[in-house]
Structures are given as structure tokens and as C-alpha cells.
Length: 240
Ligand SMILES: [Fe+2]
Ligand SMILES: [Fe+2]
Image 1 (cartoon, rainbow, N blue to C red):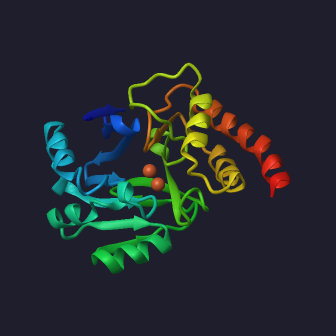
Image 2 (image 1 turned 45 degrees about the horizontal axis):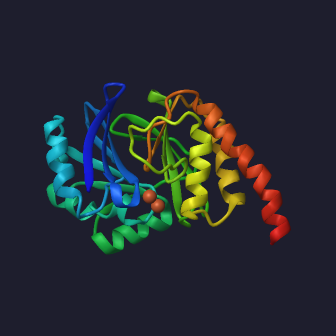
Image 3 (image 1 turned 60 degrees about the horizontal axis):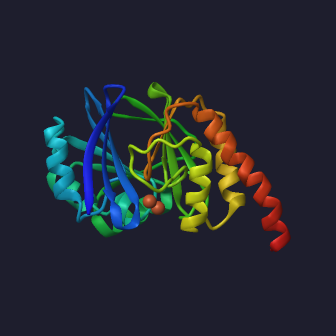
């Protein structure tokens, strides 16, 4: 069974999410509305696009208004529905890490713009700061910080199993057990280095692609994961 829903945060951030019970995992796509258009972060898979389209329409968003699309890394849940978005808006521009952007342009003939690590860029009047996340489960990954909302769109970092509505007594513990259970991280060292980059931003809300948003004490969640990495880096070094 799968369950889809739309949630709105800070009046302008729309999250569409689908929970797949069989794998106990939710998949989210984010839409930031502004006067000059709609920005999408993560497309969801192609198969889920018809549902995404109709659910967004009920929430007042026509997917044809999506003119800019950020692809955090080259994977189906992050970029699979790009051709569907493109079919509805031929002038759509995709933004990604350089390696990912070249692949997207080559395969989908979409106009791409290359992000530069931690270099602010304006998309639809919105200042976006891409933060590259080397080898965090994909070799061309990144996360997105949006200063206006003090929001981090963390893609697959800070993931947790369960629905987007789950409330964990200890979110850090839940994230760590989810990371360990999924085995999706190639290296604690790389996770640690991106968390250190992330920590210096003023973050109030974290929007993971998988799992609930972290709205209370986001800083503590980042610190908790850093602490986990520090402990396990030693172990990783010893184990080789
Ligand atoms: Fe991923
Ligand atoms: Fe993912």
C-alpha cells in the first residue's frame, strides 16, 4: 500500500510525499512558490508523476508552472520524472552538480545550469545555496540551503524510515538506526565532512527526502549526527 499527501510549510514550501508501506519509506518532493514561478527540488519517480500532478493541482499548483528544477543527485527518486516536467514546460531549466548536470543534459536534452559548491545563486528570485556532499551515497550529491526560510533540503542525508508524520522521541537515534539499517552510506568520513559544512548555516528546519521534517532544534540533530560520525570515524579507520 502507498499513501500520498501534500503538506505546506511557512506558506510557501509545498511538500508532496508518498509513503510505501512495503519498504516503510516515504519519498518527498518539494516545491517553493514565488511570484516568478515554482521551483521543484527532487522530482520523484516517473511512475509516481500522475499522482504527484493531481495532488499538487488540488493544492493549487499546476506542475506546468515548474520552470526550475533542482536535482540533488542522479537517482530515480531525485530526477526520474524530469521528462514529465519537461513535457509540460519546454523551457524548464535543471540545476545540479556539474557531473549530474552533464548527464541530465545528455540524456534528457534539458537545459542545465551547473551549481558551484557553496556559491549562492538566484532561482526565481530565491537565493539558493547548494552544498556539495561528496560521496554521500552518490558521488555527485548535494543538499540545498534556502536562507529565506532557514531551511535545509537535505536529500538523502538525515533520512529516516517511517512516514512523514512520524514523531520520534529521539530523531537522531532514529536517523542513525535508519542509516545503519539501510546501509546506504559508503563512508562516515564523507558524511562527517558535509555535516561540518552544513553546520555553519543558520538552519531552523530540515526537510529530508525520506522521513519527517525536523522542525525542533535542527542544530541538535546536526550535532548528534556529527557526534555519531566522530565516534564511527575512529572505528572505520581501525577496521580499514
Ligand atoms: Fe539517493
Ligand atoms: Fe533517496
